[in-house]
Amino acid sequence: MRLSKSLLLFVIGLYPFAISVSAAQVEFHPRLTLGQEWNDNIFLTDSNKEFDWITTVIPGIVLNYNAPSVDIALDYSLNYQLYQEHSEESLDKFVDVQRANGSALFFDSRPFTLRATGNISRESLDVRNNSSIGNDLVNKSTVYNFTASPEYRWQLSSSLTIVFGYLYDRIEVVDAVQDSEGHKGSLSLEKQLSTNTLVTATYSYLQQQTEVADNYNQQDYTLGVTQQFGPRLSVNAEGGMSQVEYDEGGGVNNPLWLVGLTYQLFPSVSLKLDYSQEFHLDEVDGLNKNRVATASISYVRDQLETSGELYWNESKYDQIDRDDQALGTRFNLHQMLSKTVFYDLNADYEHDKFKPDDEKVDRYGLGAAIGFEYRRILLTNDYIYRFNDSDQDDNDYRNMIIALNATVRF
Image (cartoon, rainbow, N blue to C red; front, top):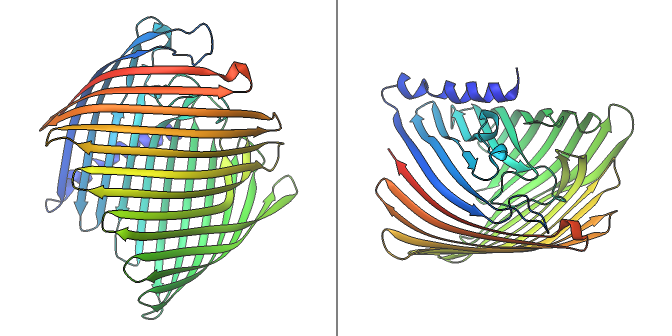
């Protein structure tokens, strides 16, 4: 069965839980969004720009279901985008308009638990090609992702636990032969040395089937520690080795690191540092050694929320000659001007290096929104500006979007 049909059955199958247990807490909210958008460069080109008026119609639902043995959260919508001047480009087919984010947790806080997630999103296929956060047309495809992960925790003593885990992960990309399916089993030993210190040792085995590269098996061996230093500082560190063997022969090894630090500087200010180094399966070009480093700060107080982030990442592919690097920063701000009026600001910059093409790209983004929310009504006026500056002229573009949206929640 195609994953698209499986996910739809998963979404529909969640509904009976909402009526099966009278003691459960259930929230069910249909909604409808109508919008009008002006886009000055719908194909993200440097010359011969083409504009369009785009009408959006987005019916959707939100379901939250909490019972003693199951917790369910679901957000599902259909995002219709109707182009006035280029009607042949309208996104009005069922396969193109679905958006979903669902999760289910069964038997929480018991020795055996089962988690399932289902997501339907519109994603960029290749970071090297032009794309924009406000454009679902260029370099985008609908992606279905479903995971299921049963887990059993065997409590040997008050401080020692063995954890048996399994993860099923399937990804399907519409209109592209880029599907993948993974089966991962894991065995972990957890030792609680004190109330502030937890150490772990984990072995996992992954069998990965993919249509973008050779199928492979991956074994990970890791040791980890989670340490709480007082009420403000917490550190999580995990290190080890990953070994990959391809079904067609050959293989590759890679150190594995997952390090995170969180520090509560003040009640309203928090700092985070994260670094990861691991194998990652790209939906276009297969397995790569992926390294990511981020440093972020967030401020939350009263009616103001703001955050800033610096990041660096590198993806070095194993079976093809390709190396992608990015260095960038992001800023977000949300301010309540009153109980009903708010505004948002966001900005980002990223410098990319793509090898072996030796292309360098500077990407700039700016966004702003002002909104009014009262009871069941939400009105927003959004502005998005994107600028792509590449040393290869064909990849330059500028794009501006202005949108008005009205949402009614029932």
